[in-house]
Length: 142
Image (cartoon, rainbow, N blue to C red; front, top):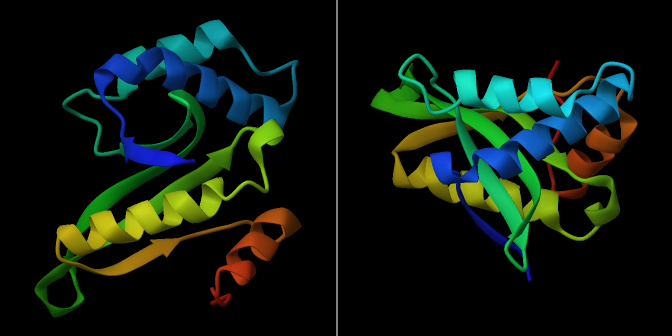
């Protein structure tokens, strides 16, 4: 079973590991650093200047994925907009419904906060991401 929840400062170690895994995935072992990821989380997330929130996906209380997002105002019809920056699942957990669970959690969060839109971007060259978004009924908008 996959559980989702908003991350708190108590999750900093798990977030640092997930951020490290994101860097490992996109940039390889020569650029990924656990120490840099930990410093990045400590210096940026949960700070007054940070407008980003993190939705965690967990299985058996182990963080296996995340979505980073912000609520933006103004948006159409005097509502808000949830903008998702990153959606990530650790490689060994991919294909297990983590992305879908996170997207549902973000949609619920957006609705709870009066958001009229949920937007994100994905690199067109990232075929895995594009296939995932198509599989949950999303259409590409250029």
